[in-house]
Image (cartoon, rainbow, N blue to C red; front, side, top):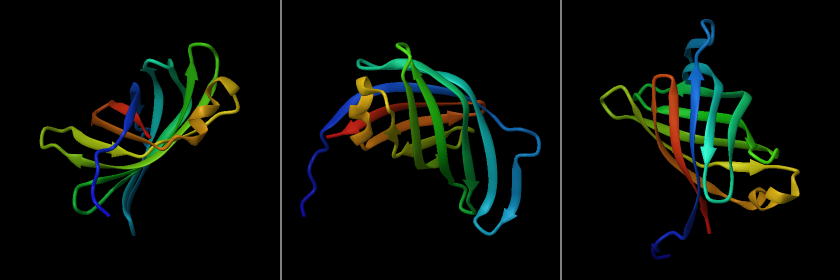
Length: 143
């Protein structure tokens, strides 16, 4: 199989605020240190959908021995026209050396709202950066 350029559609830019509760660390587990981060809000905007990141939402981050992060995220997105969308993804964060992390994710969506049912069949990719207290992604649908 030969490599070809990916056909992608820009969906939206998402910025989420993140907080780590005081007792949300599981240090020294067999997979690494886990941190349960609460997603406390945010926004997303793109040509076909815009809205807010609602609560509850969270990220179970595994801090791996090699310094990378393994992400396991579930977010509730609410569009400006009232649709609820579940966005869930796994991904990898790689330290940039300045306290931020380059983040690559593979989002999937779920909704019962017919206006956005097309998202149920989308495999997306997210490319972004996380800093203390927030993460920002550009999210693209693979075509």
